[in-house]
Image 1 (cartoon, helix red, strand yellow):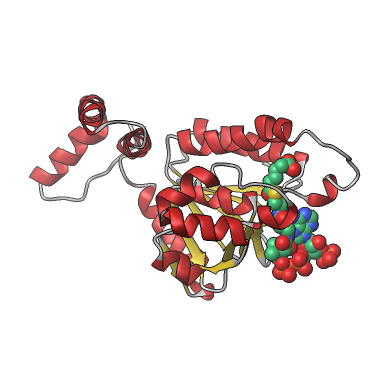
Image 2 (spheres, rainbow, N blue to C red):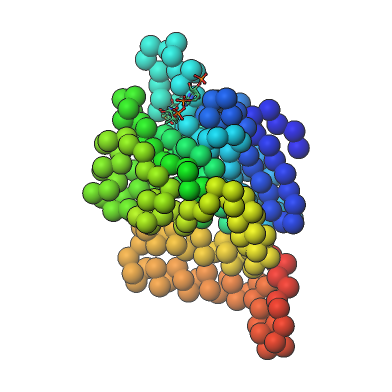
Length: 260
Ligand code: T3D
């Protein structure tokens, strides 16, 4: 599949989407939004894809909105931009019925940081950092950051990050529980791809239900969540992969999950 602002490859059940505007630190323009939407549709519908890796080309992961597209507009309707592009993107990631690993190869700023936080597992290079850059240009955190940040790091740290707009180095983001882990720069893609290939061999439908149940828990009472678990458990019990998992356990062999 050929794109201008991203690359898209599939191998061993893993789709890799690379944001590819390195001279602008992979910041978003409209074309990148459109192409990413297209790629995510492929990830969702291609049964051969069972895990997505999202990363960036060059020295940055993503610097959020391309600000050169905003410089000539006096009073832009940014709500419209959020409504048409950023919110649908974040909703697509949250609802993706397959696990998503974000390989943060360098700076993740503005909506780029929000994008990373909307993925399921974030692995960052040690030299990478996160910046809630919005306050530095008179904006507010978007693309789910005001929701994800306080839940990930607690309100006091979320406020510090969002109000100060300072760099949060990847190792500290790991220490604060904002990301899964930081790894040596040279190991980032090897570690991420090993994790992705492993996830692509797991029972994909159960993983999708795990994502959904955890997501739903944030809005539910404890008792309601027990009901949510019951319903997903019912569905999981009807999958082919569950039968395979039990059979493999009983036969003392490795399961061969097909994602069905
Ligand atoms: O507008 C809407 O639709 C609403 C939604 C908004 C969502 C948002 O994301 S708002 C936040 C937008 N992003 C930012 O404010 C971040 C701006 N960038 C920076 O603060 C810094 O570039 C970084 C902290 C990310 C990295 O700093 P540094 O020193 O490593 O790199 P640099 O020299 O600043 O940037 C390198 C190049 O990338 C440079 O271009 P040049 O001079 O080499 O030609 C720079 O202009 C360009 N670049 C970086 N970020 C952006 C960008 N160009 C356009 N837009 C960017 N966001």
